[in-house]
Image 1 (spheres, rainbow, N blue to C red):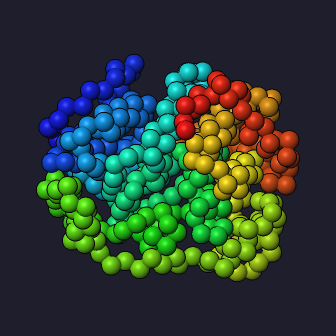
Image 2: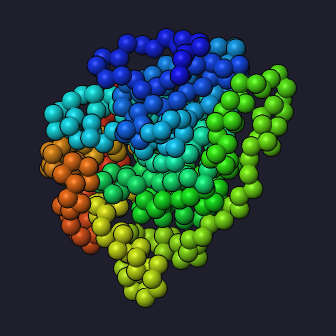
Length: 380
């Protein structure tokens, strides 16, 4: 894609390309994440490029709306964003690279910018939309899913927690479905995403290129410009959640993860048994931390949730309150098992949910900064 309207980006102290393509077409700022081999996993240069682009367009009267998409191996669409670059997390944590702290500070600030953006944001959530990709997409005013959408917050699988504002948007899903999604990392399709309030409209994936091109023809001086565009491209999709809703409400509303899992294990139902197995595979410690996160975030503003998550992620990679180094953290171990050695056999510590104590969990919610020095202190 050529850049019709160049956007000035701040220099990024990295030899890695930004993998973000931007142009203004008509009255719409168009952004394409272009790192298809990594399913558009976010790097620090990508986060900086996105931020600078959005800030420039926010103050540009010619730009009336912004559209975001990812690129697949065969061209535009096919994948949105698989999350943050977890291999970078692993390497940076082991090396003591300060860019790791910058990554999360700047990513969470970007999440806040998206959620509070004064112009319509349209996210084309085709294909994989996970982790950091959800952090970008959930900030959009119009979240489009397709028959290819695979949406999840799977962080507990790598000994992390659903960050990027996950506490805020998951806790606002109906009932206790947010706890279920956060703890299990369950993948949703278009219908379930619509039913749980994590998407707004469904398009046919074969029409995405036409819809993207048509945005450039809209006249945003007419208040109904986007309404007519949606009417043209949206398809009837039942906002139907096929999961075991009553069981989710019962089990994931219980007081603790231990009680949840033990109750699931006592239920002979196939769904309950499979869910218990899934939870037993996750980091026991980070499951407890995640449940506390979701329940605290339910009454928080977005800015306060992001500040809390910034505190939490610092402790994930610097678990000093556990007497551990970065290399001994649950997150580094989880990434090692899933993405580095790929043995899928993480050595969680503690190994059993029943051995996690409140003294291990509570310090994740203590800030290592004062309010005046917090890296996200400027978020309103």
